[in-house]
Image (cartoon, rainbow, N blue to C red):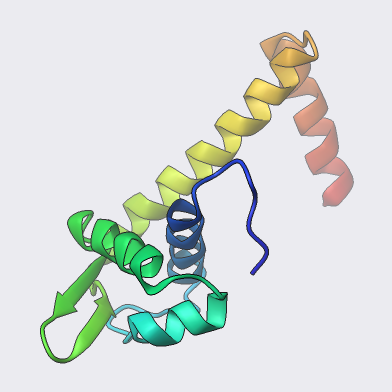
Length: 120
């Protein structure tokens, strides 16, 4: 995984795990790799991974079971809300970038519709 310099690494790890969950590469109830294994795979400090997992646990995205490991929550409502949060975040970034180009909402809609038609 290639990390961006302007975003804390633990947040990028959270985003990575979010993506894995909403794309079902980490299915509901699936066991996550250990903190040590994730740290080795991502070439980061174990404390960084632990912080990311701790926040995911606080958000109820994963369940930490003492002595067994961390598991993706088995609640489709939580996963659905997570997916919606990610979608809105991506749309916000796109909207902010396009408004910096001085486009109106109508122009953004026009270009987005044309883009989507071209993809169909």
